[in-house]
Amino acid sequence: MAGFGGSVPGAARLHLVDGVSLLRPEEQVFEAMLAGFANQQLARNLAHTTVEGREKTVKAFTAYVNAFPWQWTPAMIDEWLGDLRSLRDLKRSTIRSYSEAIRSFCHFVTDPLYEWPATCENRFGTHPIQIVHEWNTAVHVQDNESDPKKRAFTKAELHAFFEHADNQVARIRAFGRKGWLPAFRDATLFKTAYSFDLRRNEIRMLDAADFGRQPARTRVRRVRPLPGPLRQGEEGIATETPRCVDSLGLDRRGPRRVVHRHPPVVRCRRQPGGLAVRARAADRLSAPEPRFAAYRDALGLDAGLDLHSLRRSYVTHLIEDGWDPRFVQEQVGHEHASTTSIYTCVSSDFRTRTLRRQLDATVTAALESRKEILNEVVNPAGSV
Image (cartoon, rainbow, N blue to C red; front, side):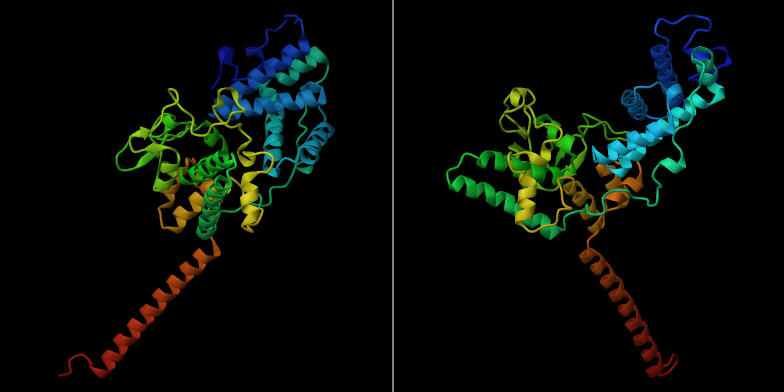
């Protein structure tokens, strides 16, 4: 769709006036490029969060190389991605998203249709080039690039983990130590994360007002906006785990004790006002030893289980119990079924039970067929 003067969204002439001298030409042209890139991405109907994330990536790369897009070279992207992998230890999927953002931006500024190459040539005597190619980016060889060690709890492991967390609260309190309250908080947090399939940041933002007041079931609002019927401030995921609700200090009518207008479920004295734990602190809630890892190691569970495994377990257990995959997808708030499939980690016991059920059905059908054949031989049709 053309913009003013017949130009496409993101074109140079929509953001820069021809023949006008700029006070800071490099910075102003770069800012105009980013504005044009955002308009071009929005014209493709991409989400605002996606566009903002790509803009931040371009700015971060520009700051790292200390050069503007018309000065970029492939060696710069090689060095940047190498540092992200070796120094920051980012996941492969994250690095791929960064390289894709730079690739999209370079494709935009090098397209003659948007007139940025001619603009840079006139003002700086050079033009931008594409610096992200197949030969300097990772090859996508599998559908799921997540860590293969990450998995869900089995039901037996999950029961043992929750039981161990509860026992630690009783043990600490029996010795008269004052650490029983943080232990109780963390045990409740683990059960809440599984019961309502919450992410780390959702746990941090959860407060008592998020729990609805329904006589039959307790529902919790999603603390993130969703593209579907579940949106922030509306009823969302239902749980069938009343023990979790009791631990939170809630009843079917709402919170039992109201500290202030919207009391937080997970409190932390180290935060201003004690409102919530930090975004990345859920795996290390109780310094100095990470409580989740300590409980996991004490039970002899493998290191592939982390806090996010509770969400994987929610998805997996619903699938194993025979719930419709579309319902599960709506419950966890995934826009695409392929994303839900990544969270589905059916156990070997479930696969064995499924195979056994199918084999039993096949054997039963074969025996019924054999019985009918024998009856036909002994008592042929029409005989007296």
